[in-house]
Length: 505
Image (cartoon, rainbow, N blue to C red; front, side, top):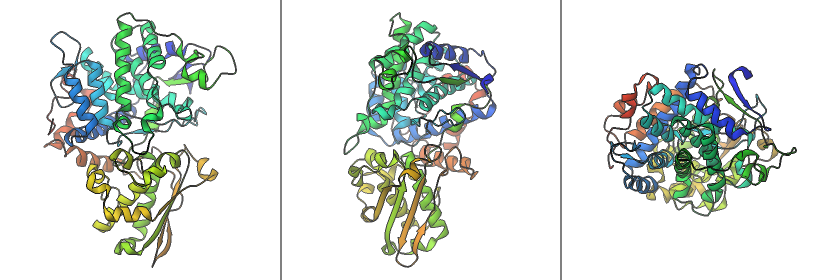
């Protein structure tokens, strides 16, 4: 199994190991990954583009503010710069990554990883999301990469952050998961820009020593713009750190074994001079972290997908439920920790912002059921949650609020906890005045989950792309074509990848 892996043991300098891996990966030291791997990266990137286009077209606040900020950093001819999404204007690369990442992440609707690799026993279960592709695009456009090399840069970012999520759970120490992505971004961006191992080690050290984001970003009674922009801000500092190191600034070395950096500070190694974990990074073949990442089929917090699947399963078996909302007596959801603590926070029973609503289990399920009542139908595509389901009117919809009041959301206990992060164990039961008790049974792998075998993922993703992208472009088919087949695109095509018009921008 290790023939296709670069092994970075805990007793070595893993910052230098990650740096060398990034350099070697982009310089084709190893055979290309299996075609299925590149195709998966392209799917996640395509999904993020639809999310970003719709967020910009809808005038979402954080993307709007950060895009305006980026425009203040436009570059002149001869300076390194990258175009903004939906623009020909070239800006500082850290600002292009900032603006692009914020737009992609704003709806909280793109890919997710759960940090679970039972093959190696690396199952720490840290979250993470496919928010970091704008870093690779900026580097590719500055360095005149073709599409094949761009995909490899995207894949390397996903691999590094995905494997770190398997071996170190930042959430256990109230640190935001985007730190893993920032480390990956600094390494791969630096490698793409021609940095040495020493320089990339400095960039990673700068990120970890100076820019650790805490989960205060996602705490509070009503969440703010910081939630959706967390990854984007981390990419900004990662790119800045890489450029700083390229200019000669020397950052902290050997940061993963540093006793006062976050890793050894929170998980003191049994042996002095080691980090808390071994790390294995795929070099070729098909066993890359991205192959175990998950898609969201609409706008919702990823840990609510089991409840959504459970509700849709119940409605498919018992369509009579939709005859009369008044017959709904109650709806119970049982789930695992940490999901219960994150999307079951009592403050989120009365969300007043979109950022809080899309992290509220009771709001998400109630909105889905309200749409089912109104349309008298069910199904992932038919009821797919979109930005309008979180606007000001939707937040106070009377029927949604009535359903929310009837939802009993519970921690299912050890039986549920033990099944995470292999799946997202959830069960849903409807109490109906005429039909009695209707249960979904235990849902482990809802549609969109990497281990779901329903076989309808491409159909669902195509529908999602069309729904979201149509909010910002007139020709959805042309947009889809622009961002597919990247492996065959030339450097000149990648240079103008973002050159299309988004309504409202």
